[in-house]
Length: 88
Length: 133
Image 1 (tube, rainbow over the protein chains, first blue to last red):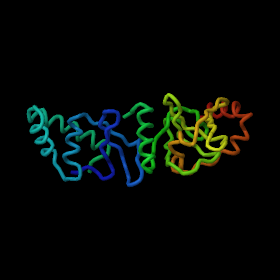
Image 2: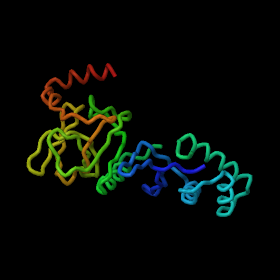
Image 3: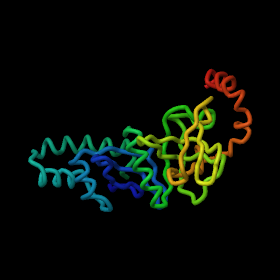
Image 4: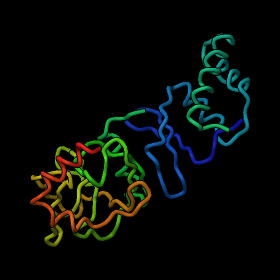
């Protein structure tokens, strides 16, 4: 899977927010708030093909978290990203 | 997700300054019957000229942001009024205008001239309209 084109991670008021952006247009109605770890993962995989397993590895390498917990978190995160239509 | 209005509008202002179009859903009903707060999607763009009849996003002291129509212009001094307001105007300068509405739900906005002529009857028309929506 990969992050769809047209979404950009911005920091607004200290919050990491993904906003739908075309070449000339920025749509504030297409916004998704990311916590620190989700923003880290987004930056790591943006523009690349990745699997859920890649995200689990990134999470366990960077944070002090067990593989089992990381897998649960990634499952939840991908569910949200899918629901919000930011990955394909 | 919902970010505070002032945060979104401040960020939108920066993007408009960069020359980009911004799409957002304004809150409040001060632009009824043309913009329904929390529902309608408006597209904004910074334009070199501001005319009477334009709907503009302006930064007022506070800062406070309004998306209202220009009802009068005296050189660079503008008078704004919400279409859904019966009285009360705001004054600002051309420099306070961050962007102009270029479409509402994909349709270019009119200049609201007829609506301005109907100002004496607004209270009645809006009261009926609010019951209908």
